[in-house]
Image (cartoon, rainbow over all chains, first blue to last red):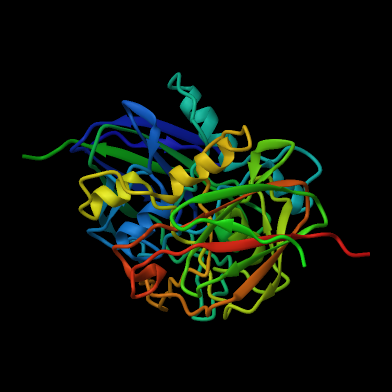
Length: 202
Length: 202
């Protein structure tokens, strides 16, 4: 079994993933949203883009076999496994200090935007901007009329997705610290999650 | 009547708009998508963000009375009039050279991303990035299942929207040069559009 890496509760974690490797992201406790970003390892200004991916996939969220693409419209990650019910989000921005101020926080609140920056800094890197993330396990249903809502995840403990790297990437995750809305479950208690990097198979 | 400014076919145009003024964008010939961006005039790194706006509006596209917000989650433009059927898009990236390469073009094709840069350059400004635009008059229907498609506009000649500036902004438009897909009408013939800046009323 490959090593499991911890994405600590309320924190970020980044890693290098080579083309051909697959990253398996495990929703260890079942109700944790994991904001996910990917940047070209050789040019951080090329990165996974939700607005370009929706255009390429012609879908609001990826299904197994769909490739997420970069802002240069090249495939970067392909969703190859999903035991989490297929419910992920491409529509909603990463949370940030402004979000928590708007929700009434008067002191600093952990947030996914800062977690991305810290996770990349641990690798000696700086994100060129905060791309809109692929929000794994995040449940943002929409209606025919265009309304969206923030609902608890439908994923279960130990459920996972796998993302196949189509190029050499820096991948970054944030175990979303949202504890005011029920997006990380009705308990409003963010938890750790885990990932593993699987070698390319022949 | 205020002066009408032309957004030339396949080109961009930017302008300064003061807080309290309203911009009326006219779909002069009826089937032209107008990609729209807004930046804080005093800090271009704060700009209208579709992923933050969907979060604030809890909608996939704005309705009359909805405020689009910045990446700092502050209201920047409010939709105050819409005679174009309410069909606009927040989901799809601005077209770019990569898009047209992917559609088979072997020579340079005008594109909204470059149009944004040129339009701001005419004001002596440089966009910090290419935010995902508010695509006025663009018809991207979605299904309950999450499929999206690129359909011709439902707007009519002379129909318009009005956007009220909530702060001093630099607004930029691109009359989308897409002539391969029918997003600018089944004739696939991009046209000019127009806008006017209306003074604040007491």
